Length: 220
Image (cartoon, rainbow, N blue to C red; front, side, top):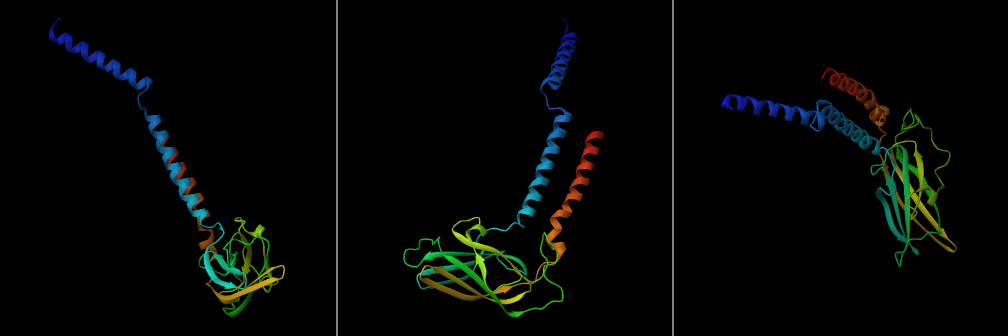
């Protein structure tokens, strides 16, 4: 067999093996496109989840008041960490002043009094509802374990109708034992509705992006 014939035979065999690998297990164009779609979808879902997670209320937050009164050590938290007019998640941790153990069987109330607030013509906004009127009574808001997912805390969602400085008083009663702590909370102006709802505006953008990606894959 001459060299030319041998070279032609080797080339044919290499082409046959390469085509066989592409058909059986080689990376095809459709597989690459599918991987690209999955990657884009994962990124979009992660971005939306992070945006929406920022709107969820959590227990704890920033410390607003901390003091020892009588037999109790009382810590008042607010979430979001920078309180804004609208819904604020107040929670209280009650501990034994000597042992530091959490107190689980107390009756806890929160009283809020406006000191220097901005009386706006329009009430505060917050999602998922729209304009919120002033609550019926802020003088005695009960804080319960059911108001917080962390059962060590007593909590409640409180509607603050206006920004400004608010005086807060936390009272704790357990049997004959009574204690209270006082302080002030600076409440900032509420975000406008667009700032609260902006993550939901991403859905049309995502839908259009997926449609464009689908058309591009089909053309490919």
